[in-house]
Amino acid sequence: MTAKHDITTPADIDRLVRAFYTRVRPDAVIGHFFTELDWDHHIPRIVSFWCMVLLGDRSYQGDPMTAHILLSRKQPMQAAHFAQWLMHWEATVDDLFAGTNADEAKQRARTIAAVMEQKVNAAG
Image (tube, rainbow, N blue to C red; front, side, top):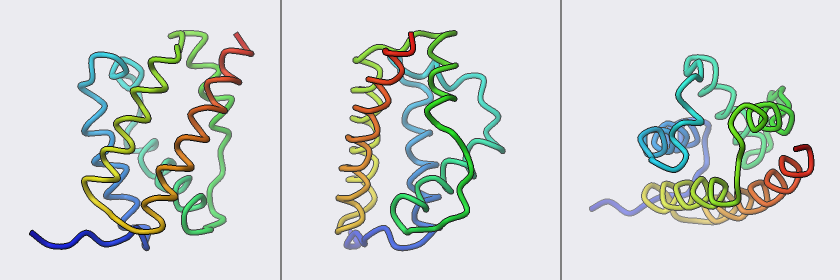
């Protein structure tokens, strides 16, 4: 088995994001949130987001908070949904990578999940 390397390139983030969605799409708890996504549009946008978060890339343009608030109005998001998302994200990171940025990816996801849950629930 080859040693895992850290997340250092956009290609690493693309691999992570694609593996994550492969994992969550069939999930019984949160998979339904992903059934109507335009994957050709969504994947590059999420890769760009994580490139901004982990690599300092400035090309991301989007408003993930508003997108999740609007989605939650159609399909209410509960604490268990955010916990499941986070569990899958951390497991995917751990399956593929190890290092400072991998740890940062998990820590940032914890913060994002907590803030997102709070704001989505506050927005009703």
